[in-house]
Length: 396
Figure 1 (cartoon, rainbow, N blue to C red):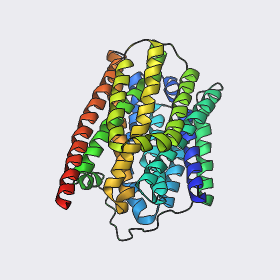
Figure 2 (cartoon, rainbow, N blue to C red):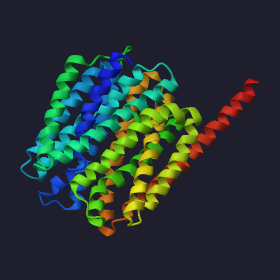
Figure 3 (cartoon, rainbow, N blue to C red):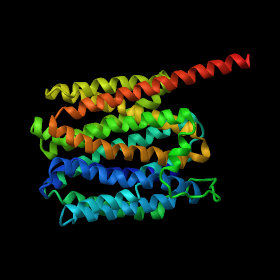
């Protein structure tokens, strides 16, 4: 692996460790301010609301001025956001911290652009995305373990640590991070309308289908993730440290599946289209199993679901980037990030209200969203297959 790739991976790893530290702790920290469940889920949405507007702009900007400066600005904003969150005197400042981070939310999508810039072909692109996903998984192994240890001092300590960690990451990136974009679109006009990249993207029907399925895929995850800690605490009486170790297990699955199995098994044995359909079916089934209040069954469903979703994330991203063209990579990844942000706005809000009605309802909702995504991808993949056959006949 090249030196450039290793530096990018290390930058992503530090960033993800920070996220892994705070995710399992955040609901418990916010509870100390006397916040009800719907406010906790709304905090998740506040970040995503800002990221929805900023991500396509940052992705497009990175195509024009380069990846490095955009990634540096995003990392610095993350540091500032977490420090505001850590020292928040009240709930309003908690929201301010998430908003600051959300307005420059381009860390992972820009890092993806950096890595894809260095890929030579489609298979290498998918494998590269898998490698990034594996680093993401490693971050979620190290992060929650650190979070569990740091939270034993105070629920505020992990957020202070993450703010300082992000600042250190910014300084390291400033010194060592290379520029990977070879052909900059210097004449490209940067439009501040957040909906323009969506309009451009959906003009291509096959790409619009992937984006629609990606949104529903995001909803399935956002709906479940927002209430996972609350559900485990309410139904199975779990503590923050136990939730942290569950996320460590997620990280192990993610690291193995995307770092090893994807490249050496999944992509060799199956076509991308078959993987997409099969993994959506498995994911839907797992969400239905999660509605049962049996701990062993719930954990099995969570782990198998994490396995299928880690494959889906990579193959859907790879398909979208492949359909968009080389000159639109940054913008496309920005749109994908923005779509996930939209899902992270709507998912946690609806999840919080559904959870208050009945604790298992969010899992039924996730299964429904996954089924819709399956139907959309089945339609577009079948249509694309038919078009390829037609072109092959004409060529003869």
